[in-house]
Image (cartoon, rainbow, N blue to C red; front, side, top):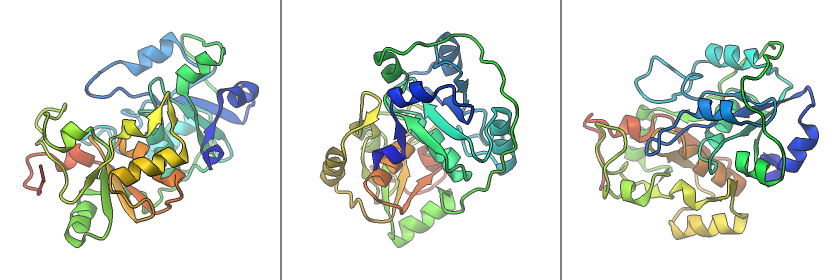
Length: 279
């Protein structure tokens, strides 16, 4: 199953200069440890890798962070990166698989089916003994990419209100246990503490190790311990829709094809907006 979603550093090294493959560094920093990931990419990146800025290839009119862009914005951005309908896209990040699943989900949401993640990320690439480059990357010839947004991939606040009222899907929160249980303040100013009523907690970092997902057996045990039915229709959420994708992909790896993501997540729900919360 994993080979359908990931490539190894060895595979990427062997195929790095294939003109049909585009490598993207999709790193984003968590609000608890802010960093300029583009500058870090300039300092070192896999040769030829372009930077996919998840806060800029987004709905920049929204007050919420890195919300999905419209189809035209996505099409224009990836087309300028040399990505066409037949391009194999390989995504990695600089951290412990914090951001790559969100970028993977974004590409899939807009109809790009040829997209995989580099297992181990940049650290795994370097640990395998492969070289890195620094500085800007030469622009590739632009391609024509036509995004077609998948209708059931991203959910809105209204969708979540309906799910909470009907209790017809399990809601899984990827934030830390302390944030989920309202034991520590949210890192983003102005947000209430707590969680969406009826939701369950699977901290995203329980699922990964050294930039890779744990084994299917380990994932299944973690979900079971958190009282998650891995086969049930599910919605994942987190602080801003970033690590919700880590949990979403974890469920997909276990065979669940009924998983959706709440794009606004707690940055949307947790505002002082009168929506119900639990603590």
